[in-house]
Length: 137
Image (cartoon, rainbow, N blue to C red; front, side):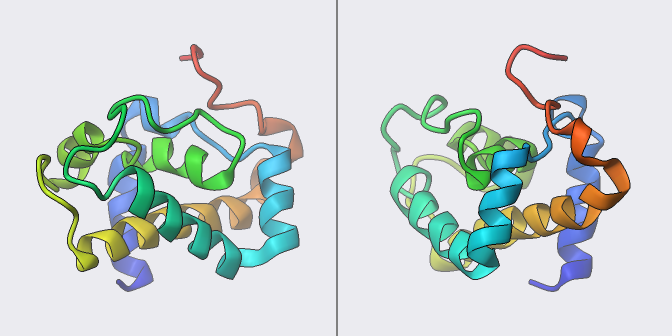
């Protein structure tokens, strides 16, 4: 999916106060800087395939940690953390396995959010990485 389409979708999602408060923290930024977007994309594809793509994911609604990996934080920021959020935010229904194009879309939107976060870091500054902790709001 092209960047303009993804950016428009991310802008709409960012208008949701809960989603807008998530930002990458310093260790997650370091992960991206050290390993690169290609590795992050592989991790995203693996995590989505294991945790989100099945018709009935294990512990759906609780399967995505709040942090510790850039993909996890991005999932909460983009509404791709569980099948309920995926349905509500992206219109991708529950109760069936995700198709290959749907999986690709989820990975694309996660990776684009991370790319945007990395690009904005210089604008926002390194002291703002605490945003997005569970319970803040």
